[in-house]
Length: 165
Image (cartoon, rainbow, N blue to C red):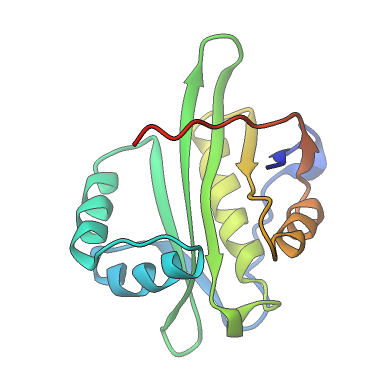
């Protein structure tokens, strides 16, 4: 699992132009739960709609976590991203992009870029000095790795994980 970090350079400032096409990005609402459940399934994750609503409600009250959705010209959710800012003892706040998924039909239309731009703008406003994304090493992830490279992230280090339950 590569660890990707956004480099600390002037060029990595959040991009404010909207994504290509008629895609817009906004904060996720509990009414987006069904669409988010479907997007989670694309990532191999199972969650019920009720559990998703509860998680979205919980995050609305927290300033260190956020969820965004990309919406197409018909008002349909076609992607989502989530992030968290962690205050580290040794280096200050770091933002983690915890999830990014787009519907297959919406890929290549700027959905991922729009979501990552929303994440980096939020992370910067939250005081994070660095943004990090963990990307899986499974089949099909090479395209997402190229996408992260294109968005200014660079591979660094190694990730170790331990399943707790």
